[in-house]
Length: 483
Image (cartoon, one colour):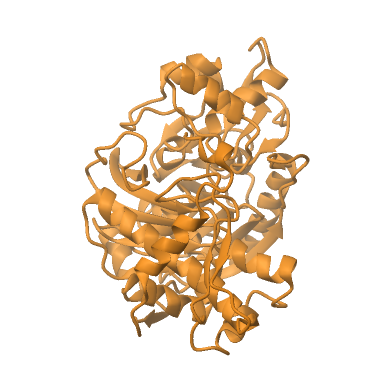
C-alpha cells in the first residue's frame, strides 16, 4: 500500500478548494477558485453549478499535478444547497439554489399547515421549487443532489449519483432516525424516487474519480460541519468544535445515541448525523449563530472602522475593555438558543468616550459571547459537559477574538492547525476507507492544536443576557416565524 495521501475537494459558500493531505495530516498543494453566489432578488441566493463543476475539476487536477498520485479522494461541502440536472446530458436545469436562499418560506409555511416541518434553509423546498420550474409534470429523467452529490457526479464523469448520510440527513427529506428518505415529505413535494441519490457511508469506497489522472477512488464524503468535527479530532462523546466563518456553528459529538428531541431541543440545538461508517451512525448536535465573521465584515465594508478583518485585532487591543459597550451580532436574526428571525444587531452602552477601539472590541466580544451561548445550549440539549473547545474558521486567526472566546466560555480554546478543518475531516474519512488511518481513535491521535489559549478574566454573562434580550423581536412579523 502506498502512502501518498488523500486529495480533498472542499466546496464552500464562496469557492472551491482542493488540497492533498498526507498521512501525517499535513495539508499541501492547496489550490482555490472563487465561485461566488449571486443575489438576484432579496432573499434569493443562487450559484452557477456548471461553473462550480469546472472549478472543482480545475483545482483537483492542479493539486494532483503538483502532488502526483493519491490513495483516495475525499469530498466536503456546504450543506443543503440544491442542484437539479438532466441525467443524460449532465446539464443543470436551473440555478443552484444556495442554502441561505429564503424564496421558499411560503412553501415551508404551507407544508407546516399539513403537519410537515421543514426549514427554508434545507434542501426539501428548494428541490420542490426547482422541479416545479423545470419539470412540472415530473416526466423528465432528472437528478437531484446537494453539492457533494454534484462533485461526485463531476469527478466520476456521471457514473456516481450518491450522497452520504451526513448530507442526506440535513436535506429535510430524510427520516429522523437516519434510516431512509421520508415518503410523506417526498409525496408532499411530488419528488420522484428516481431523482434521489443513493445514500452511502461517510467513509467507504463508492467508485472511481475517472475524470482525474489515475482514477483514484472516491472514499470519503461529509457535510462541512461534520467534516470539521472529525477534522478536529472530536470523535468521542462530549467533544465539540466551533467553526467561526461568516456565521458560526458548534458541533458536538454524542456517539451511538440519537438526541431524544425530534427537530430542535429546548435550548435551540438540532440533531445531526455526524457520520456513518460501516453502516454505524455516530450522532451529534449542532448549535448555530447566524452572524460571526460577517460582523467584522460589517465593520470593514459598511462602517469603514477597519481596513481589513485582521486589523480588528490590532484596533481592539488599543483599549483594555469596551467601557461597558455591548454589541449583539444579530444582523440576520438570532439562532441558537432564541431562534428569532426578527432579532437585529444591537449596539448598547455608547457614551461620548466610546471610540473606535471600544466599538471594534465590542463586536469581537459580542461574537465571543454568542459562542458561549452555543456552548451553554449544546451542554443543555446534550446533557454533556464540554471541556476544551476546538476552534477553526477565519476568525480563529484573530488573537483578540480567541482570547475573548476563552474568557466568555471560561474554557481552554484549542486552535486548529489549519484554518479550514473541513479539509482534514474529509481526508480522514477517505483515508480510513483505504487504510491510511485505522479508525476514528487513530484519527483522534492526529489532533495537534497549533496554539492553546486559556481564560484570563471573567466576563459578565448576566450583562450579556440583558443586551441579548434587547436585540430580540425588533421585527415582530419575522419573530413570529418558526420552522
